[in-house]
Amino acid sequence: MKIHCFRLFMLALLPVSILTAQAADDTQLKHVILFGRHGVRSPVLPNTTSDTFSSLPFPTFSVLDASQPLGSLTVNGATNETILGGYYRLWLTQEGLLTGKDSADAAFVYFRANGFPLIIATAEAFAAGMLPGAKANVDTVTPNDPLFVPLNTGVAMIDERKAVAGVNGRIGGNPQWLLSAYAAELALMRSVLFNYPVSQTPAPATPAGKIDVTAIPVDVTAGTSTTPVNIGGLTQVIGAIDPFVMEYTDGLPAADVGWGQLTAGSIGQIYRLYDLLLNLEYRTPYLARVQSSNLASHIVRSLVQAAIGNPISGALGNPSTKVIVLTAANTNIEGLAGLLQLDWILPSYQADVASPGGVLMFELRQSQSTGEYIVRATYVSQTMDQLRNRTLLTLTTPPASAPVFIPGCSVGNATFDCPLADFVEVAKHAIDPQSADLVN
Image (cartoon, rainbow, N blue to C red; front, side, top):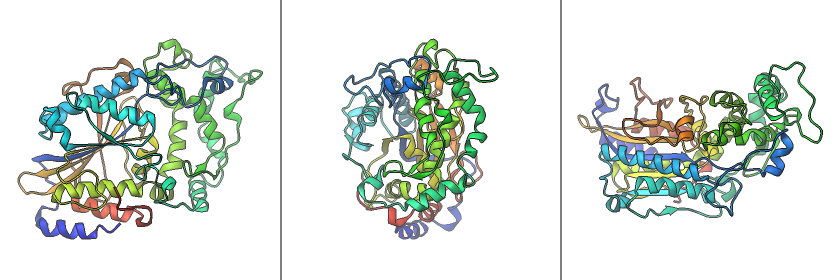
């Protein structure tokens, strides 16, 4: 990505003495990018398939669009997205980026969602909370958006041998060792699926006519443009446990959350298997570089465009845009985090979880005393209980949030601020220019 000229511009614009973030936060928010995951959804597999993995039948969900029963935003999921959008309306108004006059504010907010019904519905529900008095336009590119699926659009090309080697190299070349490393999670998962105490020894045999997904061999092979690496049996494991977090966060009765066997804590333990799969498929350095460079390029260019006030190729919105809201999947957030080496942890979740509706936020702030521009990264999410209870969010009862350290440029203050010029340099070294374009 040819962005070194922007660094030169920034260095010319800002005296060297102000290239270090200030200890006292005298900054003003100038622009923000909210990169969020879709909200709580129904399972992606039909119950006729999922039920072969368990002794008891899986529950059903109330979805927003009955014609899309699988992988669809739930009614409660939409409510939670609107609640989160409403919180951001309050926060952005307090920060002075929005005025609270929705019709006027709408001109300064850019919404873009990956072109799937689940994700579009999430973006629309969020927009309804952020701008309740205006009809927000959510941009989509169908059938494939190069911002989120660059492999499907030819923007990026993957070397499958490197992809498979990259994953194998992280697990010692022996995928079966994963079964040993995650034996406790697999044992808990199996006990829930087949309805017996996890302490029972020996574990009972697989019920007749059922499939024990924990016994399917794990292997690493070439995948597809959507999922470049296939990790064998681990994929089936994820299909079996996928409903659990959605059951809890959608507010289903306790008896329907893992058939009454799971709490938020035990769901988190089982979901270490889901997190493992996402980590291998999207945070592996080679895969993150190929799959997420285009998104990172657009994010960086959008921040620079907002700072200098002039149009830049490959930036989103326009120089007057104050808020950019991007909505996609957990895979996209994990990939970008892997590319930039970002980590976070929030109450009720395991480390680095891109939770339902969770937002990776990049703030462009300016010091009022020096004029310096900085980037401040934060991960924001409703806790599992806030989602389950559809808790109203306000400035005094906010969602959970954690400052995110940006390796290579964050300074040691409480919010891990990163001078914009340094962020541009860090991104330039992380981004693969062959996997990014300058098209909006």
